[in-house]
Image 1 (cartoon, rainbow, N blue to C red):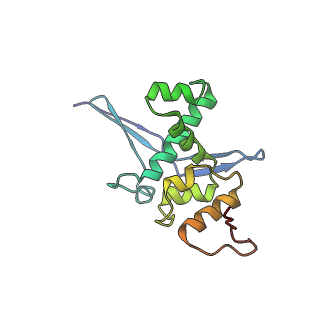
Image 2: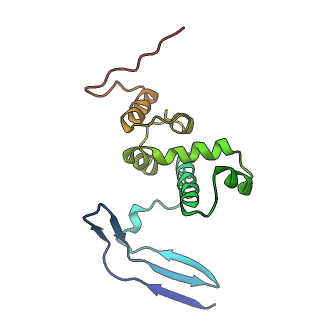
Image 3: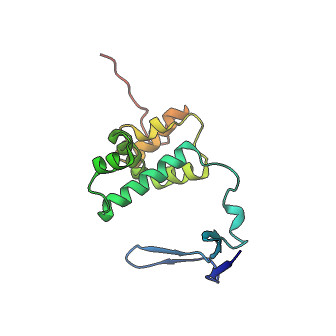
Length: 160
């Protein structure tokens, strides 16, 4: 068995530019085992990556949403309908997953870190996603049964 190793040595680095762009450099090793490539992170970063646990449904949905949005923005596919046809998935499902990409950064981080309250479901976040981040945070708080944040009015539900 032939093994090929490609290394990018150094320390992890975050570079912030004046125009607001952020570049994250993570040293990696790429090992090739019988034609299959494997990325190996440095030991200092390895504990931060959960191993052996499958991703949650919310994590998979968020990743799919970002992948599909990136394909549309890059011109790789024309629109959501093209993705639906290609992947044989309902267009409304794709639309809901792409909606997750508009979530507030802290909510996306909570999905990845698995720190969202258990009561918050994929449907809560993906269906009819509020436009503002504060409304999104309030929806999560409402779903979790938490009181409104300081300075916010509680949601008013009116019946007909």
